[in-house]
Length: 104
Image (cartoon, rainbow, N blue to C red; front, side, top):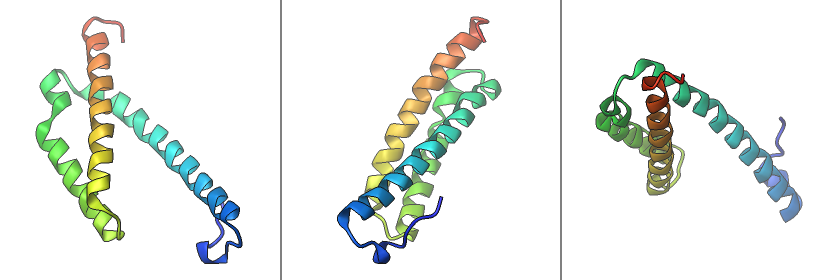
């Protein structure tokens, strides 16, 4: 997907359209990421492995750093990833329960 350089956009509508294209890509990438989240349960045997406090801290730290490296607000990305991680943990716990009961 080709995007117009932001400085070449000639209207607010064109900029909004470009933002929409980027958001669509972000959501598609999140969908790809989510597939991995669902598959990782194959390698986890208990709730402690899913909750993985040390991994959560490292992910948050890395995402904050990546945001800063891109001139973005690290706090915003920390909040976003806290929400994503909590949702991932919830889903993984659901899948672990199914795994233990033999459903998957």
